[in-house]
Amino acid sequence: MDDVGQQPAARPRSAAVFGASGGIGRALCEALSARGCAVIHAGSRRGEGPQGEAFRPFAFDLTDEASIASAAAAMRDAPPEWVIIATGVLTLADGTGPERTYKRLDGAAMAEVFALNTIGPALIAKHILPLMPRERSSVFAALSARVGSISDNRLGGWHSYRASKAALNMLLKNFAIELARTHPQGVVAGLHPGTVDSALSAPFQGNLPEGQLTSPEDAAANLLGVLARLTPEQSGRVFDFSGKEVPA
Image 1 (tube, helix red, strand yellow):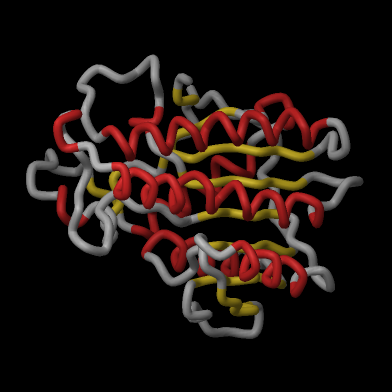
Image 2: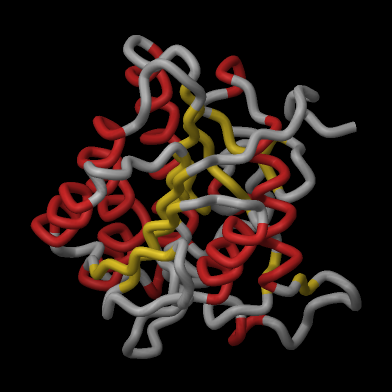
């Protein structure tokens, strides 16, 4: 059985998706629109995203806090009830992939991975969490990964990616504790989407077992279903696409 709560599924009236031009991000935007979300702030590096009456495109850069602050300020007239950070990097733009051994660690590459997977989402939280409604339910979620679990680590390797996601998970827990003091109906959560057919997973799809690869559309539906059933008591945890909690 799912670990998430069993209350009736919630539907946000307004939402923001950071990473709307990616496979999962675009699918999340379209799924939110199909579920009747009236305002969807859709953010990408170039300000591109889905087209339609509900969408409000904006540009942001995970490594530029000023761009994140500007994006948040533009949402004040229609603050999001749900915020989903659908960004992340596994292979860097120069082709540097996850390190399979500590012998391949490189400080500059590690710093870039942390900037995109940990620091960027933290800065989004800094500027977006103050906009979240205080008197009704809200959700702030970020895509994480099962490999960010310390207790579930059996294989090692992928050092920067694992560590950046573990650090993200800790930040989400911190944010949940702090937000609970002012937003008692708020939920902060990490999400493990599974292996999704996207640019992030493309270099690593060759050896996947049959049926393990999920389409962005199915992944989006799964994740929205999980978020819709989370309760404030579950805030600060990480859940997979089926609603099962990922151990810390």
